[in-house]
Image (cartoon, rainbow, N blue to C red; front, side):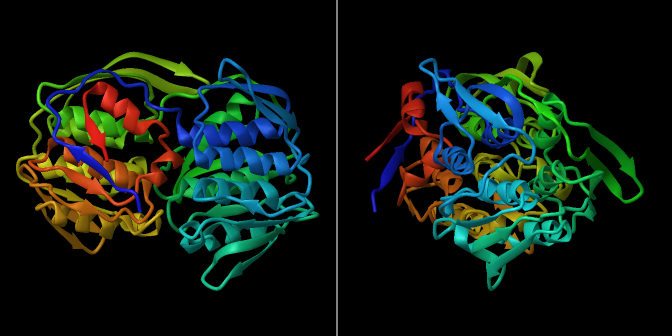
Length: 437
């Protein structure tokens, strides 16, 4: 497999325009697809994952094209207007595509077959199947609730009240999307708040979404048989992607980076809150709201970090950022405890194990205690070749580590990076990094 090496950097400086938010890009395509009229999307993330969503929607009758200026135009078919796909929907490596589309399809009266790559076929899908079957859909999966799977959509869908057994924005979103084409109101109750991009975007397109606190937790209710109206969307820079150049700037000597137009949704900003607690010099300016989402510009400077405790209730707001946070913790003074990381075991890889093993191979003392990762900081030795397990965030996190460690760090395969951050290597090298063969 191809190998990529990250060497210690002298300085990082400049402006790092991170790609569009992956979560919002998926939702802009899906919700635009079931709105009435043409939705224009600026800043759409053109990664493999998001393109899988666009391709699946085309198979269900939704036209989308990219204009010369980079904007995308989606011709909506209205709620309930998707057509039965004539071929298998291949979701590649995208769990978001698979789970949200299961919900969208669940209340359409047709059959859809879905599969993915080897990594996605190991990830759990029963968590979505359970609630949508209560709404009238039928889902057939491999043993263990795995793909490939078949969704037979409900001909007479029913609304439900669904209490999430484990906080999950993907499951919540799947149920809400299914509820758009069911009569009455569909409610999801979550014990801990998860990212709310679906709720914000549904409102942007004209859906009736009510959020309230109950004695069981936070409830989100959507009114079904809705008529959504096409609206323009400007996708902010993905805070999860911006995390990699941001942490790199904290670790490289005398670094200063500007990260414009970064999504600052409070349910996604846990990493930046944590880095601030660790002593990171991150300045937030030009706060604004675009398409319902809070956005700001960030300036990040090299900083001396200290170890902290990251509580489990913060995990949903930064679940994708723990690999790069663990790298930051490896350079901090003292010990960092990251708690409540069970969800990392069912990501693109077993990220919890992959992080700990990667840190250990770079000379960092790290332990797993149940769902807690404990990292003892210092300046890592590096000098290792990391097995990424075709996980884009593991690959990028350890390439960031190589920029500040004593010796270079290699990753065994960088191909997965394109699923979320196409152009990552060029962007980092243009800032002063040394990443190459």
